[in-house]
Structures are given as structure tokens and as C-alpha cells.
Amino acid sequence: MAVIDHKGNIRGIAGSVIFRGYGKKNIVQGKPKAYPLTAASITSSSEFGLISSAALAIRKAFLPAYRYYDGPAVGRVTSAVSKCIRGAAGTVAGERDLHDGELSHLNGLEFNLNNPLSAVLLVKPQVEQDFSGTIKVLMPAMNLSKDMKIPTSLKGKAYRIKVRFLLTGFNFRENYYEYVDNQEISYDRDEKTAERIIEMKGTVPSGCMLVLSMSLSFYSFSDMDQELVLLNSVECSPCAIIGSWQAEAVIPLGQPILEVVDTAIRTCMEYTGNWLLAELPNKIIQQARKGTNSGNKQVNGKVQLDTFSTFPDHNELEMVIGKRVVF
Image 1 (cartoon, rainbow, N blue to C red):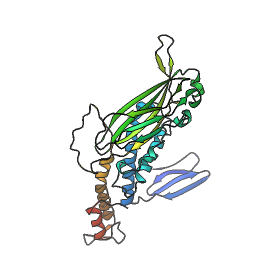
Image 2 (image 1 turned 45 degrees about the vertical axis):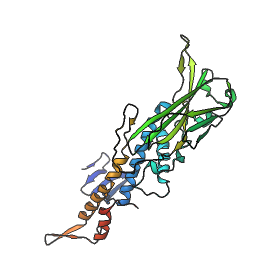
Image 3 (image 1 turned 120 degrees about the vertical axis):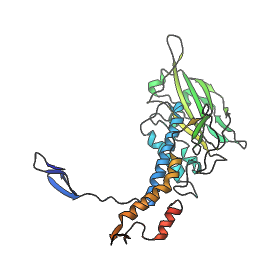
Image 4 (image 1 turned 90 degrees about the vertical axis):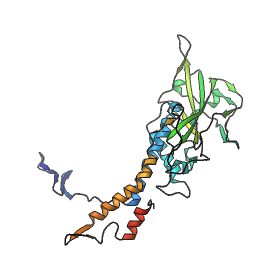
């Protein structure tokens, strides 16, 4: 419905015409046409949903490590997962997930850029996976008074610093993640430390990719009982992913899950990627039918295919119905 405002301008919708104002001008325009979705656009939107869902699972899994995150962290994690999946060689949209991806794009991902790990800890640990699959972290020798740049707001309060390494296994095709190992090193504020090797232990579930995070926690002492008091906040909670490794054995995409998941040690993810990939062919078929029907016209009571239909010939329609369409 269109109305006349107090200035005499017509605003709103009347039939297929939109009335609006811009400054002192009255603008009349037609309603935008709703264009049918193509197979490529449906596939792209489904893949973006998969990427967003995988990024959410990663953020949720590492919440105990980073505790606090800055606003843009959601976009950074989603962007990193997108680069992993879309940068995978030899794959096509609609037939891939993070298990096919190039996980190197996750390495160095910061969860809080207000005081990022790379800026607070001035030495860089070395991470490697040996031939047996064991992940090791080499912490170099440090002089914490020089090699750790504690934020000014915490400098006079932080007496104890804990470095945590959290190794998490993700199995997106079976819809769970599991904490494989969690190790902490405690330092005094001005301590001088020797080189140290941390060996991540724990049993890695079959089909799980591994992601390792490193985080810093700052503590003061309670005046009453000398208990440790956590000082981390949104302004300072350094945490980053420092290593990631693909699974050696993973079930094929779309294969039904046969193993019963032990929920006592595994956390089910609210991951919709498998459902999106499974429903993708149906969405394309439904859009094909919708586009075909919208292009049809009645001739002597019979439906006749329009020349400008989305799918003008039988062969193209068979390609869509017969298999998952990717571009």
C-alpha cells in the first residue's frame, strides 16, 4: 500500500510500482524481478553453509582455550575455513568438506587480536608430527621478562603465567570432536626457562583431523588465601592455532555412520555440512522443476515448454537429475 506523507510525497508499494523519496526527488520504480537460482548458485550457497557450520564447531571446541574473543574473530575463523576448503586441489564445490581441505590456512589463526599470541609471546614454538604420528612442541629457552610482552593493564598484577596446549580431533563426517590431550606449563613472571619439549599424548580417534591450539593465561594471587585468580579478559586472552593435520583414514563423504559414538568422551557437533551436501541434489532438482514450470505456457490446454526456459532441452535436465551438478 502506498501513502502520501506530510510533505505530499507518495511512499510505499502500489501494485507492481514502488514509490520512494530521495532528498527532494520522488522516485517511481518497478518491483525487482525474482530471477531463478542456477545450479551453481545453489551449490555455492550450500558450500557457504557448510563452511559456516564447520567454523562454528571449531570456535565452540576451542572456547575453553581462548575463553574470550574479539568481535571479528567469527569472520576470521570462517574465512580461514573457507580458504581451507575452497583451496583444496582436485576438488569441486558440492563434493568436498574440511577433510578434503588444505589445513595450513588454519595455522596462525588468532582468536583475539586485542592482544594476539604472536605479539605477547615473542618467541615462536616449533611444532612437528613425527613418523609415528606423535605431535611434539619445542618450547625454546626464554627469559620471560624480555620474551613475554605482558599488556600494561596486567603487568603489575600477573605473577603466574600458564601456557596451555590443547589438541583436538575433529571428525566432521561423523559429526563429533574429541579432546585428545591438554597440557599446561606454569611459569613465574620473571622466570628464566630452559628449552623444553612437550609431547602430546592421548589416543587419536580414527578419521579425526587434529588441530592444536596454544593459549596464555595470566594469574594473580588472592589477598585472602593466596589462591590463583584469573586475569584474562576480552582485552587480553591470547590464543592461536599453531598446528593442524589431516586424518589418515576417513569415511567417504556421504557414507552412513556405522560406529556408535561414545558421548562420554566425544562431543556431538551442531554441524549441518553433511545434511547440506546430501540435500544439494534435491535442491537443484526442485529449482529445475520450478524454473521449468515458470517457463511453461498453456496451448490448447496442454503445457508447452517455453524457448527461454531455464532448462530448454531434455539432455540438460537429465544431467541435473542424474547426478550432483557442480560447476
